[in-house]
Length: 207
Image (cartoon, rainbow, N blue to C red; front, side):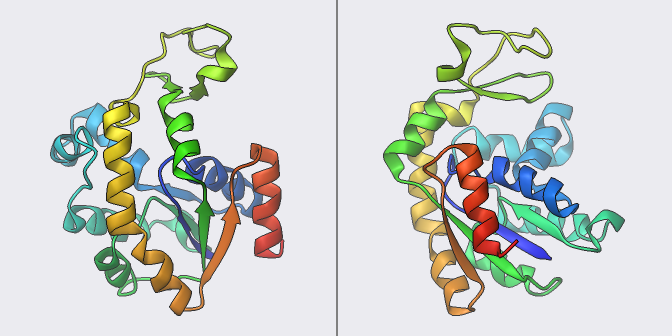
């Protein structure tokens, strides 16, 4: 099954995609993770992407499309995959149709005010990329796995969050209508716990 995970930043795409990946035994392909790895390693793509990500802007379509097309040729993606963070624009969606076929598009729904609370309270381990929310930390600032000091990602700062939401509403939200017209869209509300949200997703998928 080839699945696209849509939804605004903070709606739980990464978490839900990881759980679904394990459940279906297909890879979670996150363009965000791929880009962040490139930035951390200082690759040419990573350096190009950093300037855009730091301002909460989208990386140019041509770069991301080429990266995704190459990734989908890998052996582990031949029996299905979950695209997390791609496509983000109509241009990307149309380009995607040129090299693969999508079976289902999951649209994760969450109100902006809840998104802001989730993202502004998010803390990340710079070593293992494990994610926490301040509400879970009880005042701690240390990763329980690595014992490394947690950080706030640049794209989780208040000003950047607002810009990311604006970008989503302007450029990515039209994909909802696009895939609805293609009869591929399924809506999943993600305002509950992780367990509740995942259970709802499986019900929507008929699994």
